[in-house]
Length: 225
Image (cartoon, rainbow, N blue to C red; front, side):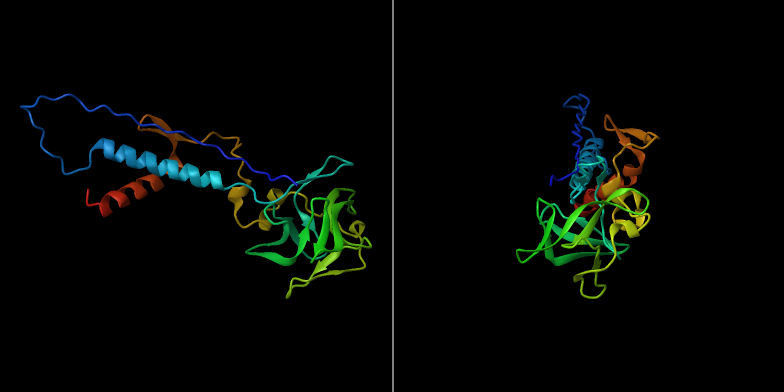
């Protein structure tokens, strides 16, 4: 299953040309850091922030239903919702404030759930009681799986996907499912961000305070303030 996520790089360049001055008119050293130093420090911090933003890509698989074309990334069980980690194929429980990775079950590229190489169930689209096509973890006999609250061990129930209503499909549409909401920020807000001009570049206002603090802290440690 393909990994999903996107990253953007924001190349920043700051070129400041110092004014010409004669050799006889030596300029006294200012007790404050020159503008060039501040500009370079701020742009370096901005680049670091952009790099951190790049790292916030989705680490879980997204599945597409071959029947309806529905795209989901939540795996439903009787008592929990999970995601499939792209890097390992492991299942991760999604609960508010508690993300737990199940140690033994692994999902194959075909959607089979195996433990120590032995098939124990399937990950597949099924219709719930509302008629919505969503992803379910079922046993080999088609019953919905339950996750033990204490051990995390999966077990089969007697219930079917059609017994459930309001089963979630998209992690980012169910706010409490994912601790870090930044994974769901696609940058497509209806309102454009407010920016200010800084070192020849437009910088989002919300970032300026953090950048200033980082830059002045670095200058203070170097004794330039």
